[in-house]
Image 1 (tube, rainbow, N blue to C red):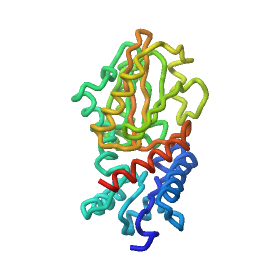
Image 2: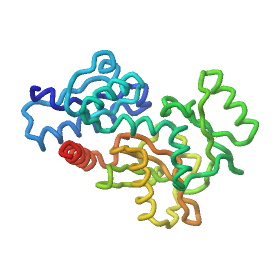
Image 3: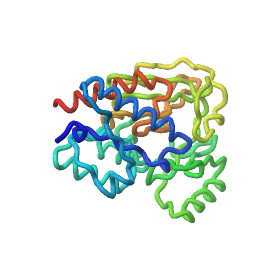
Image 4: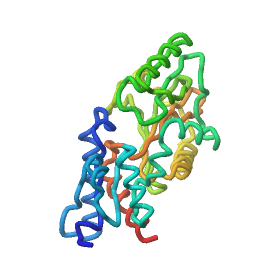
Length: 273
């Protein structure tokens, strides 16, 4: 293979990056540049849109991929079976589908909210990551929940999960394997995809066990098989934390430079195994 064919990056389709296309592109290109420097490559790493890759898969030894579509993941899965390295892995991305993730987390006792609660319930599509604000709906009562489920079904979404609303501080986190973990409070400034974070109000910075949260995030990453990941957790006034979201390869907008270098290091390490 030529130098250009050793590594190929697969860009996430805009429909899987609601209000985050530029941020997702930025981290992917930052990782590619970090890899180019660390591996002393002469040319930039090629970047291919996931829909184009699905139609015409380009051969490579390593895929740096943010793809989420079924077609692209199937194509990457075939390359994986032939011996190529994919980061994130196809299996890992598939495990982040909400319905599968919900079962995995409950089975392995990852701290998470009950399915319904007295402060309202969140309804989330279960077949894929949220692609629009209407894919994650807050329901203040049972009647609203039934109406929201009916609206999902009218859109052809028959797989969904419910999660009790938990009052407390909303914390967002980023991670790369066990090499990096970074968290911040969403209301202390920063970007919001859909604005749902406002429902929890201004962070009170309740004390909690940061080491335990980090370890459970690491454990969840290992259970799913995801290398680059992010998510959300709620810290209640008793200091208990509850994971409410976990996803493959976020934008890392709060720590992009550090994350890009760490992801590149992890890809190189996996390639040498």
